[in-house]
Each structure stands twice: as structure tokens, then as C-alpha cells.
Length: 349
Ligand code: NAD
Image (cartoon, rainbow, N blue to C red; front, side):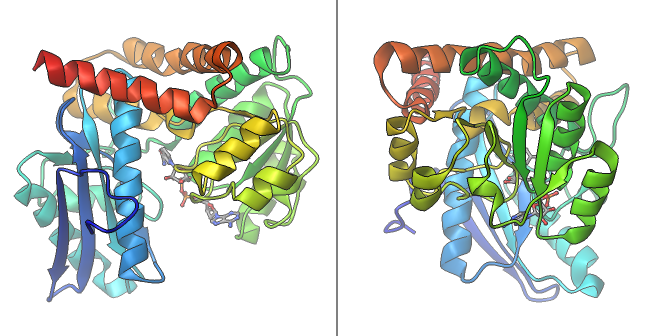
């Protein structure tokens, strides 16, 4: 772990194996400076344990930055369960995972991510109270994806104003890669505002459903990243923007929901050199964690929660303006802004 390029002085990284259920999982706590660490649990079939660790390390660091910039009193953490998980073992395994979260005594709060839904959270909740994304009450809580999608829409509106000098999204072409919880809800948001959608998913059912509902144009999942479009919105897994994609893509902006969209820093520099605007992923996909935190702490009303999500618009504008003013790439500016927030809190403590 200490030799892993994604290791960033993480506070604690727990590797767990439960013999009875077959659970293999990694819980990475990047930082608890801002508060208890929080971030979703991902269930994915990785090529290797090394790949799973790298994912957990990167995602948990991203959560520290995301939570800090979103104005939450939460640190950064994330967990991954190594798949595949046979259907008949799923419940036992999720219970065992809940016990691991409980063992951390509140230093890590879990919720949904790729491969884990609200029904899974209900099972974990039988073993731990450090869980959110359970069921909605008064419009707050439950599946975070619709709130994530709303926040991304606000980020895309900011890009539309700043980059395309448009008052709204009417007629703006957006290519959405990945049509699950986040991508599917984002298509609904964008289509309501008159955007023209191109979509792709590795699951044909998802493509058919979205195309039928929102009159979107289907593209092959390998072609969508280079599509002739205004904005590319990666909403599948991380690493969509490779150096090749950054060099060859035709969109003028990248603004989507997936975590860790830039495969390498170099990919980020290439976008910047080509004048392609990038709305940093953890800035505009924070709507879900804001909803998760509100459900968990019950410390703000639905209106206050929506205000916090709406603030993604102005934060994105601020970052894009700083890019113009300084000539620095947006992803570095956002990282520095997040580190400043965390450093100030550390100093105050
Ligand atoms: P999901 O599992 O519901 O959806 C992911 C979709 O991507 C699936 O439909 C899958 O078939 C598709 N996909 C996978 N690989 C693909 C490829 N190569 N090309 C095209 N489609 C592909 O997951 P989700 O909850 O929608 O999360 C999507 C992304 O957003 C993830 O990176 C996640 O970490 C991030 N995110 C999610 C939330 C949330 O609230 N769920 C919040 C913040 C960030």
C-alpha cells in the first residue's frame, strides 16, 4: 500500500476478509480532519486486489476534497467490495460488511456507489448505524443518484454560461456515457431543459430505455467519448478521459458525474492545452453526498439541502473564472481549494 502511487498519507486502510460469507473488502479512510469520513461503497469485479486498493485510495482522497468543497463537516472515505458476489451470498456478505463498518466506530459512514443500491444499505443497516442512503423521509434521503444528477446539471449550466455563453441548455448537445443511477437521472434533468442528448451504455436495456424516454441518439460506448458534441458527461466508471481521449475528443467541455474522470494528470493538462473546459468531477457530483449527509445528520431542511446543491453552480463558475484568470488547469485549482479548506480546519483544531 505504501508504494501505491494513489497512497496519499491515508489515515487508515482496512483490508477485511470474512471466511463465512466470502467477503473481501477494503475500507480506505483518507482524512477525518473535517469530520467523520464518508463515501459510498462500491461493489465491482476488479482484475486484481491491487486494482481494488488503488480504486479505494483514489476514491477516498476524492471524497476528502469533495466533502471539503461542498461545505460538509465530513472527511473522506470510501470502500470497495471485491466482486463478483453470488446472489445467494449477497445478504450474508453485506451483513459482514456492515459489521466491519461498525468496527470503525463512526470514523467511516457508508452509502451507495456503483453496484450497491438502497436495498443493500438496508441490509448493512442491520449491523451498523454508520450508514446512510436508506429511505427518504420528507423528501430527504434514500438513493442519492437523483441529487447527484441535479448537482451535475447545475455544473453543466455553469459551463453553458461560462464556456458557451448561453443563457440556458436549450439545443446544447451533451453526450452522456453511462446510463445508471446518475447518468439516467442526468438525462431526465437535461432533457427537461431542452438539451440534445447522445447516450451510450454497455447495457443495451439502459440505452433503449433512455432513448425511448428522452428521444436521445444512441452511440456505441467506445465512440461516445469522441463524439461530435458540445459537452461530454462521463457518468460510468473512472478513467474515461485517457490521454488519447483528451487529445482526440471533439467536445469543448467535460462535465459529468463519474469519480476520477481523468485517468492521468497528463490527460488533464492535455484538455487544458487544447482549451477544453473541465468541470472537476468531485465539484459537480457532490449532490449525492450532500443528500447522504443531510439524511444522516438531519441537521438541515430540504430547502437548505437544495441550496447547498445549487451552490455547485457558483463554485463551478468560480473555478472556470480562476482558470481564465490564472491560466492554471481547473483540476489543479480545485485540488488546491480543497486542500486549503482542510488545512484551515486542521489549523483551527
Ligand atoms: P451505476 O452502476 O448505477 O451506473 C453505471 C452505468 O455505467 C451502468 O449502467 C453501466 O452499465 C455503465 N457502464 C459501465 N462501464 C461503461 C462503459 N465503458 N461505457 C458505457 N457505460 C458503462 O452507477 P452510478 O451510481 O450511476 O455511478 C456512476 C458514476 O458516478 C460512478 O463513477 C460513481 O462513483 C459516480 N458517482 C455516483 C454517485 C451517486 O449518487 N450514485 C455520486 C457521486 C459520484
